[in-house]
Length: 206
Image 1 (cartoon, rainbow, N blue to C red):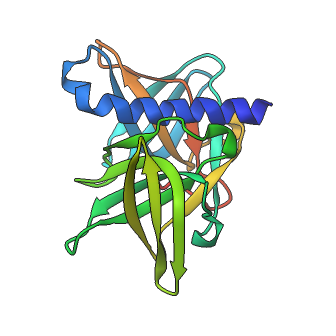
Image 2 (tube, rainbow, N blue to C red):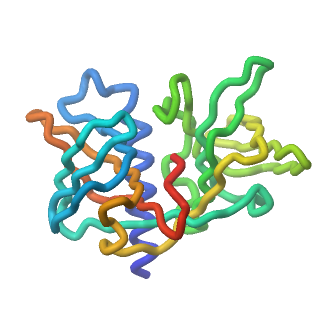
């Protein structure tokens, strides 16, 4: 039950982050995605060296949960699975995946839709149900559906594919790679309710 609760909280955070993107400039508060390496952590504060090289201080809410990512593969993606795929438009048309997150069944439907994402410039995040998955020696193509719409996304060989796994606060230690959805307050301070951490050599690719 505890693992399920952590996963649901994580899904809510990812969904809220995606939904907030279009209205960041107009909102008093804004969701900010922080990707980087832990420098230090106390019970209520996390210092992260971001991928841009900045030191980012994040206030942690009381009782903050943590989830890890575990390695999966294209072969694990099945019809009916609920996935989150970050992708980029391809020059020849369609989208190519940057990473794939296979959600646990209990999280199906949370944050459904396709939104702007900041993994790379012009990238998007699509949370949707797999209606078809075709594998090949060069990777594969998935067809996903959300809100009555359909989208085909190619998954090149070597694309990171992960799922969620249990973790504890002890895993959020100096040197660990994290993905944090934080809220920026009017004073510019960042606050987060949960953390996604790399574990056993697998880092959050989202």
